[in-house]
Length: 178
Image 1 (spheres, one colour):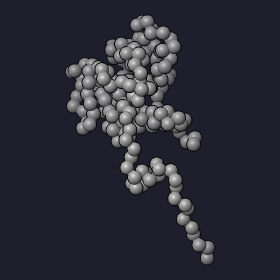
Image 2 (image 1 turned 180 degrees about the horizontal axis):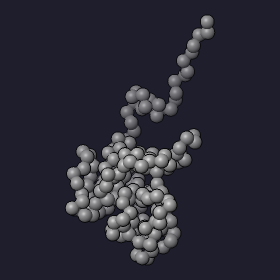
Image 3 (image 1 turned 60 degrees about the vertical axis):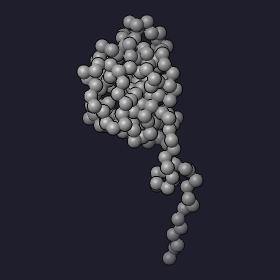
Image 4 (image 1 turned 90 degrees about the vertical axis):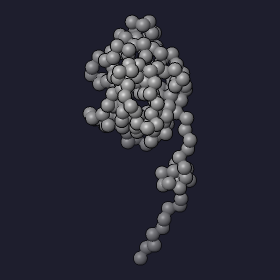
């Protein structure tokens, strides 16, 4: 009979966190979802659990709705953008799209992206060009965003988006490449 040996403990501190043996590290990152939408609701709910400070920016007070506990609701970016902030625009049909993206690109935000299917025209490009935003800045807007998992429902889109942000932040390709 062969004796089974347990592997040596993993020296990776993330393993201790995953097993509940150590607290999760304190993070100071922010996820700003722009525009109230079903995807934004899920994205912000999951973001809090993933260590982000979740913020909804909804410039139309009539569309802003009571948020999940812990989600900040604001009408503008004021005070929420720094180099540890990721911005996800969740509706590309809003008239405020151009000005909000222009302001996001002018900020120190780490990452700016907009949801949309790659086979459809990207409405942010003409909206930003009309505001005089240079092509080099426009090209900083990520589209499509998230991991390509074939998501369709708002919760799936939010999960794919958040997974993509975490992979990007950690310098990983996402998917199953390790």
